[in-house]
Length: 555
Image 1 (cartoon, helix red, strand yellow):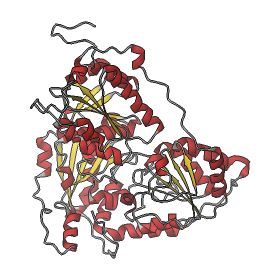
Image 2 (image 1 turned 180 degrees about the vertical axis):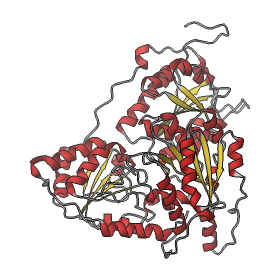
Image 3 (image 1 turned 45 degrees about the vertical axis):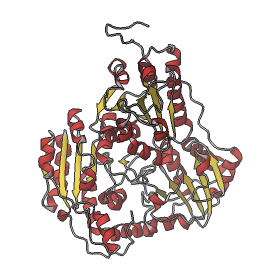
Image 4 (image 1 turned 135 degrees about the horizontal axis):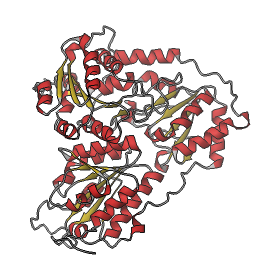
């Protein structure tokens, strides 16, 4: 291996790792260059990998997540050692809780210098253990070959198991040294076939579903690759479909059998709980999605999941099908269509009353917020990708009223419920594709967590529209304090001039002061292109005078 004029090797461990990642199809990485990670940046241009420099590593992680959801590949994050890696921890935790594929690459102290505590730059007690506490796995490698092997292991995990973030720490002396990794070792490996469930259990599940009078399907984030099969099963059975927010759009939400991503509502949960056979695909049915302790199913439960730990989690299955959601659902569909197990003319269930109850509860829960969300949703192109944040406008309203025609049309984090996700996730989604317009709808409090990423979007010359819904701070937490008999503290936030702030970043800022101007302002922003910010104070929302008796969310 030759050295250049500065004594640097032309083929380092850093190049071997990135070359392997590129071979699997990844063509963009998110991160911030630093003193210790430059050998991870050196090969990017040569390999045809686009480098997105965020203004904070948390934004790098959320950008990588938005990119991953549009491409089906793992998002890749490059951090420097110490604080750079620590800054990405919230994004790593999010990817773990929401089951998203992510590879985090970071340098580490040289071999033999572990736990030295001698005051070197970015010295960290145990970075691998730190990340390993919240990631699927974290490995400190000892050679370039080990690092490349870790990359292959990561892609195998994402193909065959529950996708979650992984971390590869490469000691600085390994990272910068010559890589003794042959070219063939850097090529993608053939992936094992996707497991499609045990045949006997599949037959038992098919018999249960075929004999059901009131079958219902619940689809989670693990079902996003199974959209075609899930839709076909629903149509075969005439079964209504409910999804989690992570599963939103698995069945086109304009489909007559879709009841949307409304499991937080009692009226929607009642549909699932009253089923005589409930088919759950790719969901752990967690409290954060349900807004209730658990789903109390009264009938038999069939579950499909790639993780054995999920088959009875939060709801015991009568029949558990261990396998990839798409492959297993396809196998189940084949049984339901064979030998006329289910007749072709089976009538779909009349969902008129169920849909009306769900829509009424949606409005009653947060009337002003829902009214505003309906205006925003109606203003968006039908094919828009919408990145949400843990803001009332999203989890109390937009998640219900937005009709997503496909999976990953709403980017969101219902379990980790982090602030500052929406804008960087929108950036990642835009980097991944230019076919669909990208909009982030985000509260003023959440936007302050990631407002620096406006500069990233401007620098990358992206078309991203930011709709900032301003309710004056942390409005729900303010109500939580009042409900506990507290005087509001720390929740009423001083606001910048949002339109002027966007303009200072090189974006275009717009302020909406009148109700009738909300939709036109959003539509004009999207049509204009570039980075746009539309500031919508809540006082512009139309008033809804219906009852507000639904319980408040406590978080």
